[in-house]
Image (cartoon, rainbow, N blue to C red; front, side, top):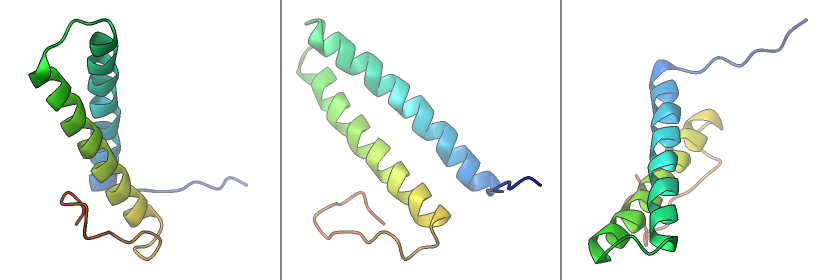
Length: 79
């Protein structure tokens, strides 16, 4: 017997976006640590970090049924 979880196509797309954003964030952070960036690139790292966090919360909220996570008012990217 196999337990298989099915997710919606929207959640699948969000998961693929999280992977892509994480790869961009990894590259940007690596470049920053190597000293190959300016202030605008560091701003991009901050934006990517927030976007990844937002997407993770969105997917977790969907997968866990909506009541598992609550948004703080201090996070403008949270729905």
